Length: 210
Ligand SMILES: Cc1cc2nc3c(=O)[nH]c(=O)nc-3n(C[C@H](O)[C@H](O)[C@H](O)COP(=O)(O)O)c2cc1C
Image 1 (cartoon, rainbow, N blue to C red):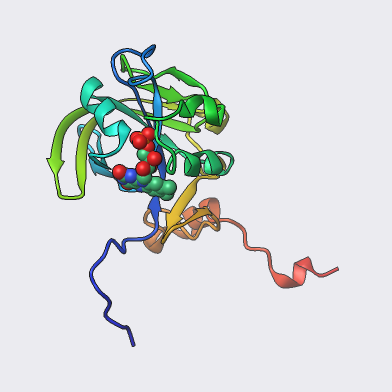
Image 2 (image 1 turned 90 degrees about the vertical axis):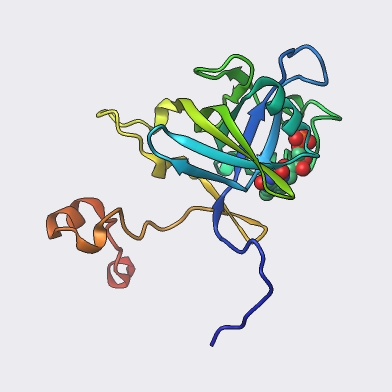
């Protein structure tokens, strides 16, 4: 039996990302490059590729994105988890979060102002298309104009092996490292050959015994 609770943002798990942004003058402390942690992020269209991030008006990053009309969504791996949390509890209005977290801003493909985070396994360059004021949050709708991927995640055929990235998910206030692969798109109807090729080999208890 399930219990009815009050309506809330119970959708879980969600990706947690580090949004990097900047105003038009990187030398000015008020508009220098910044990082903001965002859990209310999503994919919203395929052609053209579009994403959204929902950010409160009170965030310093909100002003920076409005000024430059750009931002970068940086995926978070296990190594970045602590810095990701830090960027979600301190404001760039008061400190330089790139310096504090010792992360490296670098030019993002397709963008003029917002830098990407060099240490992130995947960075997605976004150009602002629209803003929907929803209440607590403003939803920034953006077109993806570039993607850069850590070369260590590419196999020799040019396929991105994201399973190697050790990405982090956010679930009900806690960070988790992605774990067991359960299947792949269409595995419920896949051929025996495809399952054999793509499903992880399960270790039987017997074979583990010495
Ligand atoms: C896990 C996590 C998820 C967060 N998600 C969001 C979010 O989706 N939208 C938002 O406006 N703030 C979110 N925050 C809060 C901001 O990241 C936080 O207020 C940050 O200090 C804002 O930085 P800024 O003032 O430098 O922009 C989140 C914080 C954490 C720790």
